[in-house]
Length: 432
Image (cartoon, rainbow, N blue to C red; front, side, top):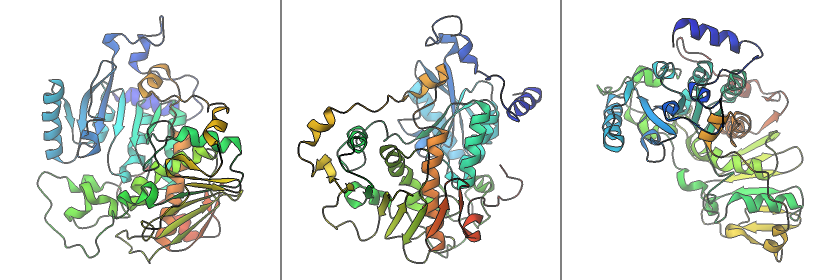
């Protein structure tokens, strides 16, 4: 993208947009059926981060609707493997980039897929939004509450389509529960369980699958591999001497880059609960943790994290020591309980909820949303809310104490140390 166009986009995003900047593929559809995309206007995408999820079979794809054209990574081995996979799967040479900004500003890229460690998500999503690119972002949405707020604002200003990649609010069997979300949503909306409700996410429903993604203390400095640009991998994160356990598959165990198993898996579990409880537009007002004192660098284990909403509803995440607790309800209210496999204490519950209206339809086809400029089901708004809830827990875990949260200001109440974790300083010249 040339400097004059980049400057124009920045000016357009500085105030209330008077019109939407449409990607090039939309113009081929404007003369007729808006669902039609001419072959010459096939969507294109680029993936930032091809070491793990970015090179997985679900995402490293090309088809008639969206073609992969570019990849980016700061590890040259990841790039080499990505290029080989592109030739093997699609018979094409992919454009490669070392710096994510070059991929984002490639005029041949319509959609940017962010598959990096979470400490990069905020910067990359905002850069993509400013560049007029639609965004597919892996979870968690961001590593901090402040970054999530700013991504939400940037996407709104730019008119981009944003998708957060956790999908259990609208499809697939929820981890370990043996049922999809829709019947749970219908049951809660029916009022049969009563109110307030407690939702318990425990070993019985799979949270401990990645629970032990923890860090190591007192890492010994190692030589940086020649294939890795470690300084660029760190980016906005504080400088720490290289050790292989900090990067790639095990980075999640360190506060600088993620939030352990809570950061990695928390949004998968909390986002559907927000939807089920009808709380997409609000946050809990309190978070409490039961955990050992955490190390300042390496993330440790925890026993439980409890979120409480203003109306008394609770979400309880159960960690160490809960795996063999036995039969526990997933959702519990004064009128009944729901267990794994949709076993319910309310007689004839399936017949009762069958008479209830189905939940509102959701836009779950990301490519269709991009082509027709429709908000995706899990977007910058509800994604910001569930991401913030995850990061509330991360803050309480790091500090080892309960925190109260103001849903209006999105700040912790009477706790300056906790509020400093909302907007954390970035290294060097990196900023939002």
